[in-house]
Image (cartoon, rainbow, N blue to C red; front, side):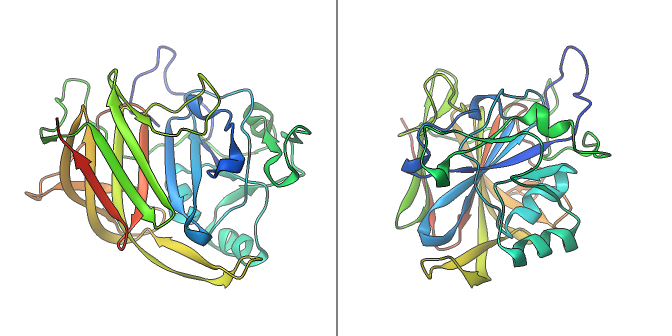
Length: 286
């Protein structure tokens, strides 16, 4: 799930996609540094939540684990793996089942509670233990992203040192390029457990009403992960504009440059931001 070779060969286990809270109440997020890919998606109230993908390495624990959304279908299906969450609304669980997504929720092997956290943010997962009870799921056989080859140079683009990905009026993710990686400003992760991205990929997506509201009466948004849209790839401290396409929920993303030629993602840890069309993405140059 990074496009990188591993000394012992590919990890012979399914991908786990764990839903993690991304509000101040999540502090400290635990387990993010072991992830291969993190997807940030819009949820109700203008907030975001993370779909954190584990394959190459498994952390001892992930916390705080939260609930699923219908947006997760198009995120998880291309991995062939399992979606791990605290639970979900019945209509969302039905949609997952109809789409063929394997969902593992609280009460299954690997779940526990952290008594030092508020109840809503206390669900903890041991990924290794979750895997012992997963059954027949296998390691993915199709790359999640169009990875560049080992001798392929990063795409050339406009220099970029600070990225602002605005999901809503209440949520903007700001990343700085320092020490050869992208570091999230105001990171919620535990010290020395931050997700440092080699590459940032911002995909502009449509958002529709998922058809229900949260307990506070907010409509629940669903990111539309089929079709195509604009994209910006931030790699090696530069920005390359292009487009993304995804013909169906189960297919992986394809990328193209503004010239229409295929655009490859440098191998490594990748953060994907699903920024709504009415959001914004901007960057500054030195």
